[in-house]
Each structure stands twice: as C-alpha cells, then as structure tokens.
Length: 549
Ligand code: J2J
Image 1 (tube, helix red, strand yellow):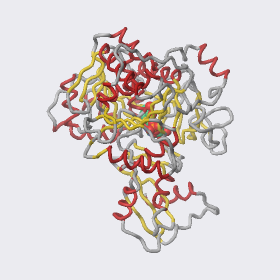
Image 2 (cartoon, helix red, strand yellow; image 1 turned 135 degrees about the vertical axis):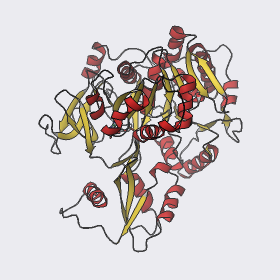
Image 3 (cartoon, helix red, strand yellow; image 1 turned 60 degrees about the vertical axis):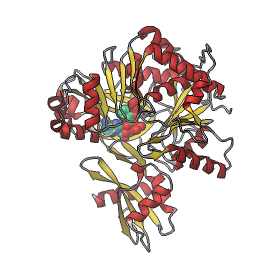
Image 4 (cartoon, helix red, strand yellow; image 1 turned 60 degrees about the horizontal axis):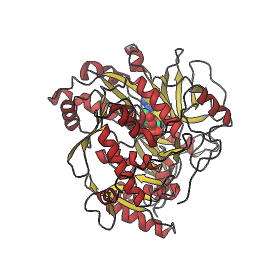
C-alpha cells in the first residue's frame, strides 16, 4: 500500500488560513457524507435507477447508508484501505453511487474514469495513480470490460508494473476476477468502516481533459470540493425537492459537482440514473420520475430540442437545464425556455476547479449570451495577453484563475505552462469579461479538441498515429462542426498514405476511447509553409485549423 500524498502546503499556508477563516473550508469530509445525509434525510429517496443486472433499484438515504457501509466493510476485507487509489469505471448505474461512497467511507481515493476509456488510458491511470484496485462493469454497451481488464493487466505486467491491481467486476459473471457481490458478501456483520481522513488532504483524483501526451490526474481535497459543491448547488437552486436526471457520464466533474450527483445528495434531493442518453429514454425517465433538473453538453441539448416535438412525453416537471462542457450557441440557449419549458443555466467549469454559472434569475439576455460568473467570492480571475500582462477591461485574453477550489498543481508536479509563481492556473481558454463580471468564452489557446464536451489532447492522438510505420508526421486539429461544435482532423504527412479507415482501426487497436479516434484525415507530402519563421507545434496546429476551416 504505497501512499500518494499531496505535496506539503499544496495550498500555501496563508491561503488555507484565509479559506478557513472565510468559512469556505470546513472539517467535513466525504467519508461522513452519506452517514451524515442519512441522519438528515433518512427516509427520503436518494438514488433511483438500474443496477448492474438491469434491475430497477430505489435507495433511501438510510438504505444508501447501509449499502455503502456493507460494501466498505467488504472492500476492507479485500485489503482496500485508507489512502489506496481505486479506479472506478462504471456506467450510470446505481452501483456507481454505492461504490464511490463506500470508497469514501474507507478513506480510499477513487480515480474517476469514463466508460469510454480503453486499455491505453486505463493502464496509464493505474500506473500513474499506483492504483491497488480497478472496479468496473462486466459488459456494457456491447463492450466487454473484463476483456479490457485482461489487456490492462498484461500491459502492466509487460511494463514491469507491480503489484497487479485487484479487479472487481459489477457482474455475477466476473470470470477470473472478483465480483462486486462477492465483495459485499465478505463484509463483516456489524462492522462500521468509517475513516477520518484529513479534510484538507487528497479525496480523489479527477481526470484532466488533457493537452499532453498522456492525460494528467487532478488532485482534489475534501475541503475544496465540498465547498465548491455547496456554492454550485446553491446557485443551481438545489433543495430536497430536486430530482436530477443523470445522463452524462456519472464520473465527469460536471455530473459530480455542478451541482451534480453530490450537490443533489447534499440537499436531500433524488438522483435518477439513466444509462441511455437518447431523448426517448431520457424523456421517459423525466416523465416517470418527475425530474426537475438535468445537465447536458451542447450536442445533447440540441438533440433534445430537435426531437422534442416527435416524442410524446410529459416534461412539465423539468425546471432547470444546465448546459456546459463546450460553448452553447446563443440561438440554441434562447430556445430552451420556450421549447423545453426549463430555465437554461450555462455552466463553464473545469475539473481543475473554477466553475462559472449564469444565475437562474438573470435576465434572459445574460443567460443566453454569456457563460456566467464564478460561484465563489473567493475566485480570482485575471485575463492576460500572451505576454502575461492584464488586458484592458472587455478585451479578450487568456483566463488565469486562483481560488478556494482550484488546484495548485497536477498530481506529480506543478508544470510551468499551467501554473504561475503566484499559484494562478491557466485554463487554456480565451475569454472576455463583460463590465458586470460575466465571462464569454471566445476560443481556446490549448492544444485540445473539444468534441461536444469530450476533450481530446492533440499530442496524445498524434503520438498514437506516429507509431504507424507509414506516418512520417501528423498534426491533430479541430475543424468546426454544426452539431458537435468541433470534430478532429488528422493532417498526416506520409510518403505512402494508408487509408483513413486503416488509420482509424490502427488508433482503435491501440486502445483509446472511441471519441478520440480522428473523425477526418487529410494527407500531404509536407506541412504547408505557415509564413511565420520558426513555427511551434501549436502555431502549426492553429494554421492548419484555419486552412481546413
Ligand atoms: C465553453 N467552454 C467550456 C462552456 C467547459 C462543469 C461544466 C463543465 C466542465 C468541464 C466541468 C464550457 N463554454 N460552458 O468540469 O464542473 C471547456 C473549457 C474548459 C474545459 C474544461 C464542470 N464548459 N468548457 O467541461 O475539465 O475549455 O470540465 O477549460 O472536462 O471545457 O473541461 P472539463
């Protein structure tokens, strides 16, 4: 059991003092979150959805308390302890809530993965987080996650990574692995596992969208994250009456915290898990469960708008629709109220911290045309030009931020590109700040493609393509797309170009999430001359993006 601690004074002493004094940071931790909620909301409904067997499940807070206590005891019997990192890769099933909060009870550190992740990503996360367990599902969406686990274990063995993580599968047919049911059965009766972790210590690892060869892990603390959720759930109007439909991947930072699953549970509301994001399934769930709130990425919101008239379901319970993850076009934002009967709330957030919301009582113009403003008075924002100087008010520039829930470094270090010596984080977004403080996202400086809210690191996919013998060089760039906002295009330099389909299969076979497989390919003998003397990789990508647009 290696321990992976935050660097001492991750948040410098004077800032920690300030955040405590302001009441932002408290002594609460995720270990006591469910036991505490059960005391306050006992018989209220906490979680609704299907479990891994496809059976309908409903848990009250009191039941969720028991379920998480039992599983925590079972996990402890399998030698998972406080401080251990555990990868969680589960779809939107009720087991997700039980697993995550059981890990929290133990003081273990969940590492949040998306169901779309494949062996190259999972292997990297396990190695980087030095994870001692990997909790996944059997088969989901036609994909066998046990086969994925096998590939990951053999990959780790090849790399000489030891010891091998314990694989736990939420399925009766766990094969050579341990089933989640067996873990639960090994619980010791009457034993109440409840760790008392340091409130300002590491609570979990979240994944970054990534701009580098391999995605970085984001360390979040109990105090900073609980605080951010207190603010976000207040701004989203959460109460005991809130019934939130969860259609985006449960482990995404948006779905967890803005206000997300945890924000709803903090107020005694109900989380309704839905494994199928199609409008037919989602509209049926809203009608059946009388959902009041939902969070969507722009392409899903557009799909809902396009299909509303064709699907005869009662959506009158829906009050608030958060849209975020990528820029939501103003024309679409204006349609949400009249066509879906919900108040649109734009959310411009990031797993590294800073979250901006439009407010529910803002005039429609602000809700439609801006991405809101920070949720905390402690959030500091600076908009700087490329030379690092503050821009004039109202001008566009790079977004830098610091505050009570924004990280001061990634796991494994502070990289000079993302953090300055005053502790500000550079989000890689180009924004403009209106005189009333509201931010408008104008573009992006980072080497990333935002494919409808799903982030792709250009370098990561370029590295995969470079491994192909016929690829001499490659640049991955964003091309505009009406539906997704952006798609990816690989500009490949090759003397003997393979076909686009061959290259797609090649990337898939290397084990990456499907959304990262390039949508389009362009082939050339050499990169076109950009006209700017010594060209950086970033300038080249920008030049090609303009060229392809
Ligand atoms: C434009 N770009 C946006 C928006 C995120 C809430 C909501 C979203 C995320 C998220 C999140 C945008 N308009 N409304 O964690 O808690 C782009 C920016 C940003 C990056 C962060 C949350 N909302 N973006 O999307 O870590 O480029 O978090 O820097 O996945 O998404 O991505 P991620």
